[in-house]
Length: 265
Image (cartoon, rainbow, N blue to C red; front, side, top):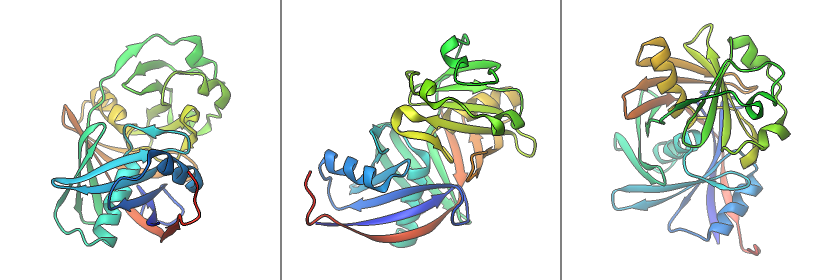
C-alpha cells in the first residue's frame, strides 16, 4: 500500500517558518494504529488524515503520541493540499470532525478557519500552574482541553523557559501562555508535553480559547495575533460569539509517497 503525503508550513508564507503539518489524503479510512505509526514516523506536532464524504471531508489528527479532537494548523494544511494539489475549486471546504463541522474558506491566499469558540472559566492560580515557571502568571482560565495562563507582557512570554516535566503533570492537552502584544493585539505560546508536543510553533486550536478571552479584554471582535515561538506565526482573528475565524497563509515544503509494502502494524 502507498499513501500520498504532503508537508505544509502553515500560518506563514515562508518555508521554515510557521507550523509544519503532515497531510495524508486517503480513499478510505485505514487502521487507527497505522495512522498513529505514521504520525510517530513524521515526528511533527500533527499529522492530518482526511477522507472524502458526501458533504465534504472527514478529518482526523494525530500527534506523535495520541489522536486529538481539534487541530487548527493541520486543518489549514489539509485545505492547502486540497486547493493547491488536488484541484478543489469551491469557495468553502467542510470538514467533519470530533469537534463538529469545521469550515475553511480561501481568499487572496489566506485560509480562514471557522471553528467553534471555546468556553472559558476563570480559576484560582494553583501551585501546579505556578511551579513550572520562574515568573508566575497573573491569572488562569480553563477551557475544554487547555489552560490559559496570562502574563504581564510580551517580553515575559518570549523569555519563558518552563519546566516541561512539571507541565506534563498538569491534566490538560496543553498550556497556553499569553499577554497583550506590542505590535499586535496579543501574543502566545503553546506547550503540550502531555500529548508529545513540547512546544507547538503556531497553534490554531489554541486561538479558539484566546480569541474569546482577548475579544472581551480588548473590547473588539477583530484581532491580530502572533505566536512567538522560535519559528513564529501570524494570525488574523475574528470573534463571532459561538464561532471564531482564524486566518493564515500556507506554503508547501514537500510532497511524496509513503511506502507501506513491508510495514507491520
